[in-house]
Length: 91
Image 1 (cartoon, helix red, strand yellow):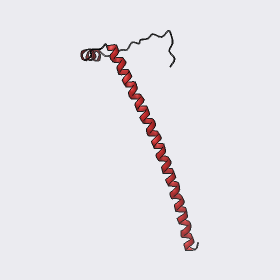
Image 2: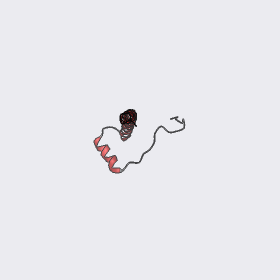
Image 3: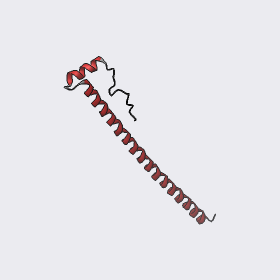
Image 4: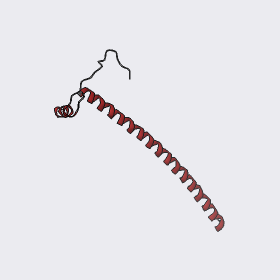
């Protein structure tokens, strides 16, 4: 993302009073630091979720490919068996 030189370095967020008070009671750091770390952690979680999803899609694709190959082999085996059976019956 390109950063505009005129954009402020900081943004304001609205937080419910009870959340702000809970953070203030439990943290020795500033609220700004807490929010920044929370956002960074959440972004990290989202990246991990996306990577997990990419891996799952890849694995599903591989599984589907293997299943398609197995289905093609079975179809071929059925066709061969049907031909042999017809040959035995003299059809």
